[in-house]
Amino acid sequence: RANRLFHPADSVIDCGGVKIGGKEKLAVMAGPCSIESEEQALRIAQGVKAGGATLFRGGAYKPRTSPYSFQGLETEGILDMVKAREATGMPIVSELMSEERIPEFEEYVDVVQIGARNMQNFQLLKAVGKMHKPVLLKRGLCNTIEEWIMSAEYIMAGGNEQVILCERGIRTFEKYTRNTLDLSAVPIVHEKTHLPVIVDPSHATGKANLVEPMMIAAVAAGADGLEVEVHYDPRHAWSDGAQCLTPDAFAQAMAKCRQVAWAI
Ligand code: PEP
Ligand code: MN
Image 1 (cartoon, rainbow, N blue to C red):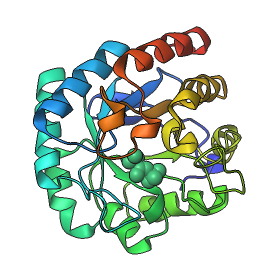
Image 2 (image 1 turned 30 degrees about the vertical axis):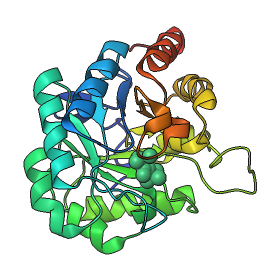
Image 3 (image 1 turned 60 degrees about the vertical axis):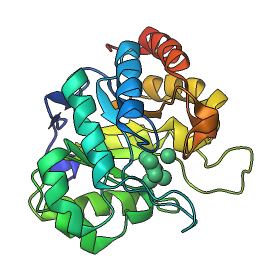
């Protein structure tokens, strides 16, 4: 179903009113790694909107490496994002980790993110295949593009064809970056499928100073959008502070992206 051969036109996915794909307009989802409070969500949402973001991202259910790390505000975090949507008009994107939260996500969230660690959680993929919301499917840490496309196929086979792919870097031997951004995935996904593909330079690099150049490179490579982590106080962010841009740095990076983009 994802195959370009049987569907030559680019798919355009309606994400709560913002369209992603089809070279229309670059879709930029930005926001904190973790939602920390209603005030934090609101302040960052307003900041990223001013910088040119079109969707607000935030984590309420967090897939943390350590069980002793902050696990997310859960439902409270989702409701904080709903407040941010009411205040800014931006659709919201958040990660779903378990089937039992599907009713909550159907009710409140505009785009359901499936994180890298769950890219091959086939039971979860089948379940979101029955949802009525667009799904942002991140590439697994150690998965090939072919496996990633097959995971999209799992969702589409269930009847939900609203799938957006997100390249977020893969594990290699390189240690100067958190992951290695595989930018060639963008034209490959466009060649093999009709689905939109966006790039997450934050998790791909793990370092704030590398985010702007990789945002620009992703736009130049033809990405349909970006997912960027932004926090007004990265040093005190509850997760992923090292890779967060401030709202000002995000706005500056967006201004540079505009110089290479067809339209933002
Ligand atoms: C995230 O977007 O917050 C996240 C956890 O990303 P990934 O699944 O790509 O690691
Ligand atoms: Mn993160």
